[in-house]
Image (tube, rainbow, N blue to C red; front, side, top):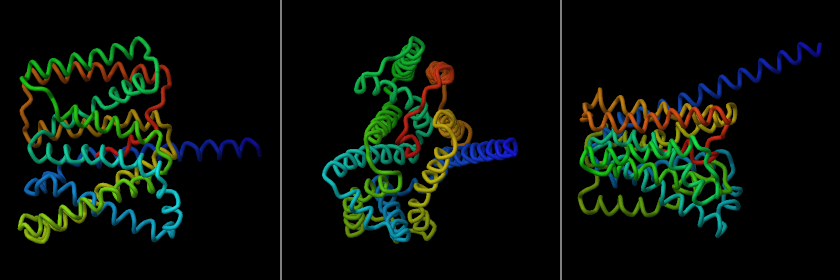
Length: 314
């Protein structure tokens, strides 16, 4: 009898693990194909895209809280000075990240956005060293050194600093770092972040509309639908990610993260035909080598990925 119970328990654990991996893959596939969605809105100015993303995400999240009858609990948890301060900083960082990303996709820099998310885990490691006093193992220093060489090579070989990639990596790395100290769960946290940005976003959209520059309700119907759906597009992968981390280990979910920038890179090169010359190939190759060593070191030492902010990326 005991053996049967153990077998059932083991089978249940494997089932949860498989579901967790499935949810993680779903989240990162959605993130990976994000450029396709934002490309459809490339005619809309980036600031308006950011504002619509904030606006509809907040309304959808807040509606979810009301449906779950958690409005009072949310207000009690969120409306505290320390909590508001933490999430105001997080909101600024994710706002910078989202704005940079939608602008870069629309301007034809998908390959460089993928580079940002390839090097983001290494940025998180450096933040741990500088702000948390963490010590790096020898192989981790090698990965940081290689990634730095890769960025420098891209800067001098390609002729310009990959500022888009660095902005995305640093803003999201800092966002994840802030979220490590944040007291709220994913639903409350993202609701508060978008809530902090809601009034500025709404004000900007009203100003754009009054100035005759608003894209919403002033263009084709498909554009209006895509703008409204920006909230669902933002939230859906977060829900998949939250389900994934409940069922699979953070290290497993973290390693699957590279599905996202890999798809973005392939889309940029093979679908949207962005330039990828020899200088970029060498620079990316050096950074990919650093990532391979990073993943190997993580696997050998069983290191956990950053616990918060990892799924709330773009």
